[in-house]
Image (tube, rainbow, N blue to C red; front, top):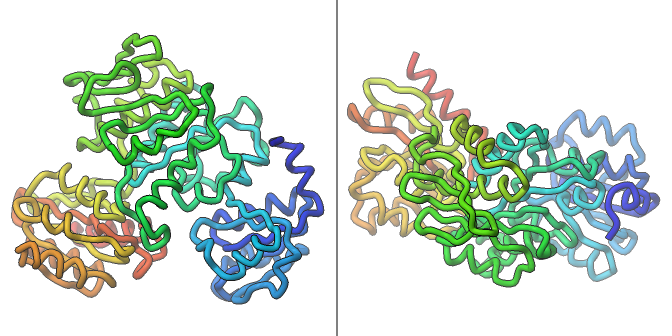
Amino acid sequence: MTRGESYKESLSGKKVLVVGLGKSGRAAVKVLVDAGADVSVQDSASADKLDTEFLKYLEGSNVEAYLGEKPDDMSEFDMLVMSPGVPLTLDFIVEAQSKGAELIGELELAYRIGRASFAAITGTNGKTTTTTLVGEIFKAAGLEPAVVGNIGNPVVTEAENSSDEDWLVAEVSSFQLETTKYFRPKVSAILNLTPDHLNRHGTMEAYGAAKARIAANQDETDYLVINIDDDKAYALGKDTKATLIPFSRQRTLEKGAFLDGERMIVKDLSGVEHYICDKGDLRIIGDHNVENVLAASAICFFAGIEADVIGKAVKEFPGVEHRIEYCGSLNDVDYYNDSKGTNVDAALIALKALESGIVLIAGGDGKSQDFTELADRLDGCVEALVLLGRDAPIIEEAARKAGFSNIYNCKDMEECVRKASEIARPGEKVLLSPACASWDMYDNFEQRGRHFKQCVKTMLK
């Protein structure tokens, strides 16, 4: 398909419905209006619940808005642009498709209207850290990338006026990928695959299939960086036409990125080793971050960046907010914010990184997860479990079934932090790693993490 200006021109006069007016939906509307499309918008929220500035924008445009309702006639639309959080199974979405409307998401729209090359990263955990690090390495190489997707600006905003020389470094979710059609990154990465979003996808097979779409349109001139230590993730690369670049923390490889003792190495396609740095040079803690660095190193190396540039950037990287983020210490107790730990596997990674002596704050919207594995890992690692949120009773039930009984239930984050500070003894750590989404109490995990940090800050005064 044609990209860039040619595609933008094809949008002129096309009737497009943008479904969902979150950050990416609002950005898509503006780009489509600029391209001359006949745009309508739909959101389940009423006007008083939406962004006021965007409402002013709508009032000053010719965009027809269906707020708190849906259009009566779905046959009039040529295309639907879906926001990631909107289920594709809604009746009016299914109806529109049955009547011939093309269904895409903001990521696909961004790919079509821009000309930039993509480095796109997905996986259940580690996406934000890896994407941020890739962005920093690209900057160190003088490539001036836009870091987009689930972090940074919406993809479509940065893609709109991009050229062939530009790079977009994108963190992409299964929700974004399931509405792609032609999306083709120059370098893609699948970091890992563990249960998440099963309330949306239904099965692990469907979840994995959505993730695998990141490489569906790649060919042998493109690269798929993939975790060979994770059998489920690695299996997602079996049908790709891309050049497969494995990374491993556990074994030596003939090509790709791996840990050789303490040395982090990338081997090119000829098997020549390129030294990145030593494991001990990293400022970020935990084996999971070794994997993130290996993945980022492979992505950047096969995007054409020299190993010495990668190594320098890696050694300077401090990590990202809300991912095992150190927040301060009081009475010889350290406090860590891991609000981005929105699933069981992410929480297990944080527990492993901090090892033992942990007072764990968890709970929220469990997304239909099974908490058995988390419960089984509490004994010997976690001293006390402090719970909040909608699915706290489910976590408590799993913990008690596993024989763990030092559990406290709290009504809000302030009470959780107070209780954790009372329980924790000198030398221990208080860790917010909820193993759940935040939507039952907060707008997003960032808001939850900032609230935790504010509670800690207040206590430290």
